[in-house]
Image (cartoon, rainbow, N blue to C red; front, side, top):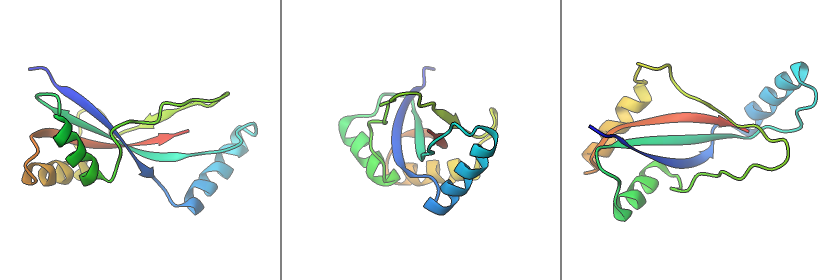
Length: 116
């Protein structure tokens, strides 16, 4: 069976205070790092591509946008951090159940953290 993956861009993953603390820790190892942005990214696995209506419903449910930010400027690096392969996080299990109860035919929703 082919799995369709849709990507949704969420908001800030951490509070400004925690992001600043992470930046300071990172700068101790790599002083050239000038900034840090942390965002939530959601991967939605379905059997069929999401319809336009389902995409809009999923975006509202996740409080996200269906168009991820792919704009890279200068020497910007991007890392996505996810749960280990072969595991299903408690967040993913609950989010998938909620989406199914809302009438969305999802196999799984997983939350990742994007570090820029």
